[in-house]
Amino acid sequence: MRKTRKFFIAAFALFIGPSFLNAQVIITEIMYDIDGTDSGREWIEIKNTGNDQIDLSEWKLFEANTNHKINAVTESILNSNNFAIIADDPEKFKIDNPKFAGLLFDSTFSLNNTGENLILRDESLMDIDSVLYVPAIGAQGDSNSLQKTSTGKWTAINPTPGMDIGVDNINNSSSTTDTTNSISENISSSTSENSLISSHSSQSVIKISYDPPELEVSAGRYRLGFVGTPMTFESETKSTKNIPLGNAVSNVWSMGDGAQKFGQFISHIYEFPGDYIVILNSKSGGASAVAKVAVKIIEPRTEIISANTEYIEIANRDYRELNLGNFVIETRGNRFIVPPDTIIYPYSSLKLPSKITKLSAFIDFVRVVDSRGKIITTKQIINVDPLIIMPEGLNVEELSQKINQIIKK
Image 1 (cartoon, rainbow, N blue to C red):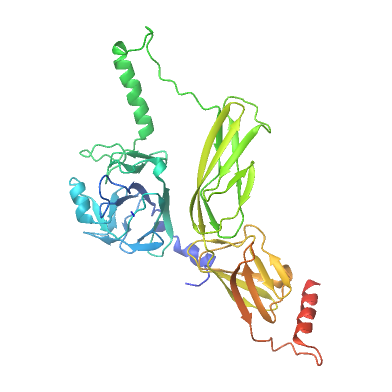
Image 2 (tube, helix red, strand yellow):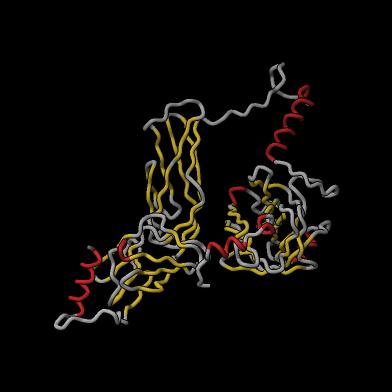
């Protein structure tokens, strides 16, 4: 179904006082694909795990590239260790969940059945918690919801709006149960009690055994990347049964955009923005393992604020941080490749000194291009520095060359 101001460290330190440190509101449950029609019936559960009351009246739910306002149906104060529901349609939510009597908020959103990134933001639009959900976890049209367990993992089980996972609706206990452990305990208990009526041929009592895999592999963490910029990946493989790995590991990467790569270390450039699922298949001897990682690719939103003989100042116009690494800054006849992991905070800027870049933005233009040569942003240099007087008989191009020579020295 479906600000451009710098962040100063001192101001930031004042902002995150004791009340902020205790404002630990997290997303705990997601109903993104309810059985039947989804229209108006999707909802998200949040919990205040901190010690203080939190006023959610100015908070936002970021979804589908939009900061959705959340409006309190009754009151907006979320008490410590309590839950609240953000519903697309509160009236339809009440019909589906008649026993719910907690804090309810109204918002306008449409959760993607193929998965997406949800971000909970406070009144200053600071990210408080985020969740990237995918259908592979479950809860796709089967009346289940995605719920966060006590171990931090997500699982698909019957909805429990306003309560911790696995807790009966009547007692409203605050204890949290890990569903995976609960299922294991139930199986063990059932096996012990009903061993006499088991259909297995042996006279021995059945024991539950969990055999670890021979091979484990990781494709890394959730990634944020930029169109036209190389993104590197590394396969981290280990044997759980002392199988010698060495160079005998085969790694095949499916990049989610139709490309396929091979090897432990790879690099890939995405041509278009979007959400991609990268799949890694690893093999060693007779063992195999699969890992996947989500990648979000966006267009860089940057601007050249100032350019002169001393520095070039570049701004990040996005709410997400900008990794300027591997982008290229060009002036007439000169270029500077920005080192990896040169990061600009959201809605902030960065000055690159001419002593480092060896660039002189004295005349003509300066621009930022990606690794493919595509121009991201350009600034035309119109005004000439009044402190520098054009020597008689020297044209503009010759002057530019002399300035570049001085800077490079």
